Length: 344
Ligand code: SER
Image: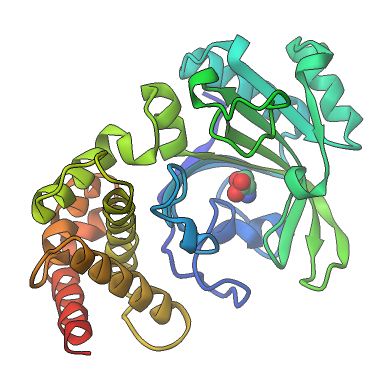
């Protein structure tokens, strides 16, 4: 309704960008449009981008919210609309389209960004005490080299039952109560990778909203592993392993880890990545082997990853037809790698 061109998800393999091994955000494949190096097909674009982030891989399985694979929804402006519209529309989308309770939503702004604060306060009408100011760590978005800028996030209060119970627990707390669901990045700078910032010719907007996180909030479930679509995969892992979810912590860690890693591995192979000993191929090899090892810990015998991958494909093929097209190849790569690892 705001005139965006909806583009397909780009490949997980970055094109012409040596600063990244894998696409890790909706904005990553769009970098040339932000910098002005390429002309976008329209100045307003929206995507649902498949993403992989492995920085927190050691936490995957151990917590309710960490995962290596996610789908990121976003709307982007390349020198078109800026703060006023982006903030108003993010609020409109979350409260009117998705229907989240405005009383449970809390915006945050970058420490020095009085302009964003004023927009939230005067234009959207959020009382000053409900708007949080955070520093560079939380409210300045950048990922290595490339376009970046201060950001304004929107948190959803999932209620006391998800809180840590500490007296100072509020927006920004590390616990699971206040969940960031939306990020408005005011992309105005380019980081050269060494911490030097150039001002971009255009002022741009990069928004990001994790589909899985939004689903957690809308479905009011414990974690990304309890969202309906991911839950069906998790249940299959349980079935293959002959285990019940939610009975034993270590068992649950393995179930969640396998559920996450098989999603990443399936999508990576469909984008042409092969398990190897370096670069992104090594990331894939590590994900497959970790999933296989946790299968062993659960007592699964023989190869099992292709069977789980079929469930990933079944659930996501409408949005990503490449999964169905490469199905047999994906199964073969997974099973070969599993066999090789079993031998080792
Ligand atoms: N780039 C920002 C993020 O990943 C917003 O899309 O959160």
